Length: 259
Image (cartoon, rainbow, N blue to C red; front, side, top):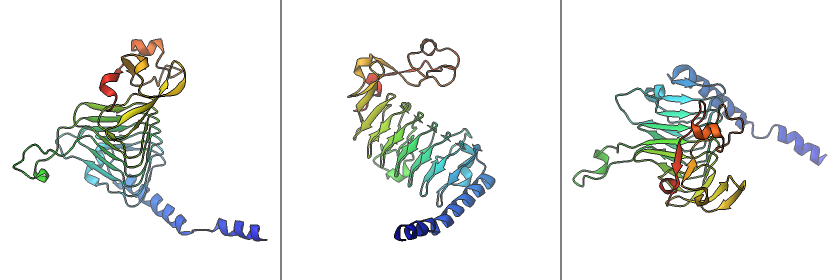
């Protein structure tokens, strides 16, 4: 009887959660219906509250099955162009209290998980003029950020790009509280401030090994094939030759390993 009583109570435990789910569902539907997003996919879930201004929605693209948890702040630095600034692809999870601020471009590819309190900015505050308060100096020109598919970005980490392009390679892990200011090769684990690669997947041995991928030579594939390469392998000949549907752009390990 005791076990049955517990099972009965479990079915009706915390009914307020159902209310929250309904509120989040209605809020998501309202945003999709009234905000002029560049596009927004199916099964979009945006939790209350989310700091997202209607004036910037036309420069944001959201994919299918995107989950944005409460407290996330989206910002786009005002400018003259109307290009897309923030792209979040299918099946991404944006944790609580994230800060995503774009001046140029932030692209989060599919199946990426951002934990809580993650900061992603493609610019920073200017501070060079000592005669002015920093609040009056505006922001730096900044760069572009791309987080490739399948990555996990840990709690409290920061990804900041002041120039050029910063890429977090496919299926990489950024540890909690890490600070990333340079690109990271695919299949890497990065920790610390400044961020440094402490583990990588050796494509030759097919195992995870400690340290950065120095043994792989001076070049690492930036993005594995996603269209015509059935194995999605960076060793694919068509991939290396830049065939249609394949990527032939590479990292230089000396430039991309943090620290």
